[in-house]
Image (cartoon, rainbow over all chains, first blue to last red; front, top):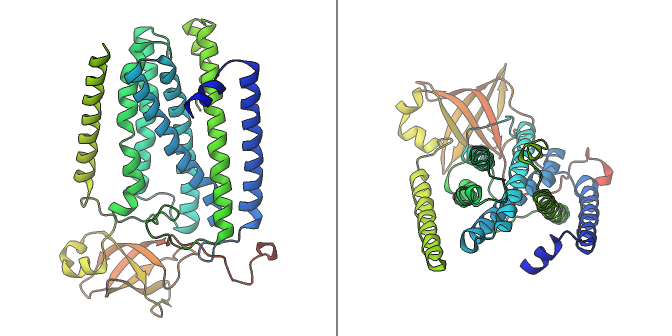
Length: 252
Length: 136
């Protein structure tokens, strides 16, 4: 995993071709997931067509967890080895995670309005997810604040990377809290289906659509991650002055 | 240098683990989104103030009385009659879970003005004939 990832992040034509292949594969999976989730899978017996939001909501949430796991692993690798490349992976992972957590909250809100009858509830799963979003938005804000204050280039300076790595790892504490919130506390939110200890039934066509959607989202997020790291490195290599560095505030 | 890094990593790991323990043990049991009928019946005075009550809608108990929707919410063998003012969401039905918000009145019925539907983590195909044919 590590060797191939580093390979794919190289700024060479071959690596770029590899990344393009990945992107096309992700696109194909997304198309298959759209067909499966939009038409092939039946509407749910209780929830009706609103349940189709699952094919957006669940992949967004799971890939957000995975992106925060990238932050955790890359921050750990940076703290142990001191290689700033891992710090850039952590930053890209946090950006993706924040964007996808926001998507999960937004789709969940619509789903909640349709099925529960409320846009928002002060329930442990929803509150902990909002905290997770805040924590990693704060992580990104910390990076920006430290690089502004010290005039260090974000992604190429230990003064930014070190505190960021600590905060990034600490933020991951919330991920198991979010995941197990529906088990530990009474919640409006239903329990996990796929990762439940005793797997409750799910229609096989729904499961297939969900699997395709999760695969597509995972691969797409990986593409974005690699692309983002390449772009960060290209920008740092070009030695762009920091003022120019701040203009494209692309997050995610 | 390397040894110092290892030591620092160990400190970070220990701090993270301690933090995780604190967060989970501190929050466990202190957060309750809704109360069960059993809890409300055991401590009716607490339910004189606005609380949330959750349970499953007892099959056969649902009826409409003017603009009131009356049903029983049960969990663990205990049930409370709920008088809900205002229409519940479209997914509300007997046998499914629901959480209502309101107060317990002196006569033992729960007067609620807000109801949300809980659903399980099981997903089954709809068998209703009104669904489009392409849902196979």
